[in-house]
Length: 346
Image 1 (tube, rainbow, N blue to C red):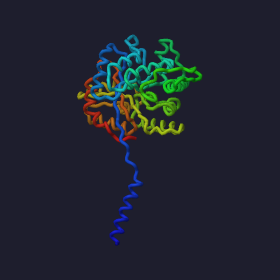
Image 2: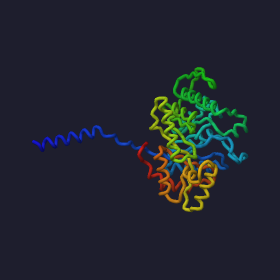
Image 3: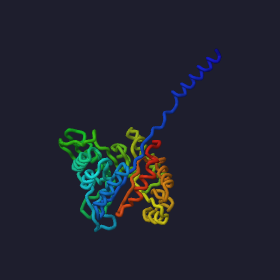
Image 4: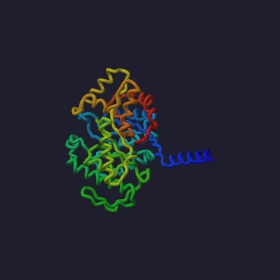
């Protein structure tokens, strides 16, 4: 009898432990994408890069939203949203968007219509990225009003309300300080229902992160942050989300950074120095840790993991100028990405 009692007690203890055990940490797929500048001499080369990257298994492809080149102002530059529509027709699987659309360039109702058109052309593959706008020079060059940071954030706040209303309501009415709608019809609706996912780009804790907390499905961190700084920003986002009673722990958090992957150490070092020369407030060691660079897959895996540990779930590798680093992107897809297709979520 004592033996039976012991076995029963042991079973009850095991059952109780199982009931009160912590649930397993859910697995989250880490995504990888590419952002290409479209201020380039050859659109055919850009299209080919997108098609190659799609074939290699990258998850997302992005353009930026600028109407002039940085530095070389007389160089070619194309419209991001018109080009995105063309790229929707040139690709089949990859999700695509603009990282990020400058809200200062377009009326939000017109932007909603443009985005809907791309969503339909791509059969529901649009990722809608938007931000407040930041590059003052192109605004001055083309006579586009460039407001204070606070007003740009306030305009973005209203624009997001306008776009969401048009996407989800039969007739939308909105009366804001900057934008209005008067029983505005909106047909057709986007293919993605209830609407395409919204990514807000930026890192400002006073103006941008509260907008991410209220309106975004996804958040994009710009280049120039170490894993430790990103972890701090994610804590700030969590605090902003808590203020609006929202749990943002499951939000997709992308980091836009640069990739340098070559077997030539000298080439890697030259590229790192060029890419980090603007980070004057960082030590060289800190600046290097804001990008993904090295000669071996093992090095790059370690760097990617550090960002994942900080909370990043989506890496967007920036290709700024032609000729594109096709070999680096190919090796990264073959040697690095497969190791992160499933990893522990934050």
